[in-house]
Image (cartoon, rainbow, N blue to C red; front, side):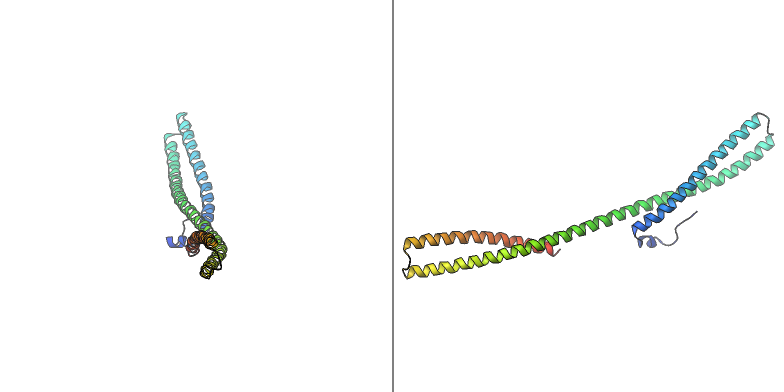
Length: 200
């Protein structure tokens, strides 16, 4: 019988796909040998039935029957031993192939996970760059409104604008500032989320 040499670590160092390929070849060979064994055992059963019938028909003496029966029994014992070895090896191979198949699936899942993570990082980088430009624009716009409020306050003190005009423009600027601060906060939170994704 063919048995794999070396320690179990030798198998673990191999690519699971190579393991499957090697075991598949041995599996096919053993299945062929198993079929030959099955045919051999059936042949011996047929022979036993035949000599039993010949003995009943007085075509064989008791001595001849016993001798032939003994020969077939020895042959069947050897074949059965081979059959057991084949079955044991097939069982070993089946377990090893199942283990290799699981390893392949784990590797494939890990590969898909890495690909998804890389894609997620790439998407996060693209979104981060776009949001960063928007964040800078919002920050600049907010500072511009702050400066406008300072200028408006200066104009009011110099009485260059009426109180009514001051209140109207001041209220509008404050409303815009509130909206921008809210957007700026949301964008900043999203930028931080994207940074966490890119650091994974």
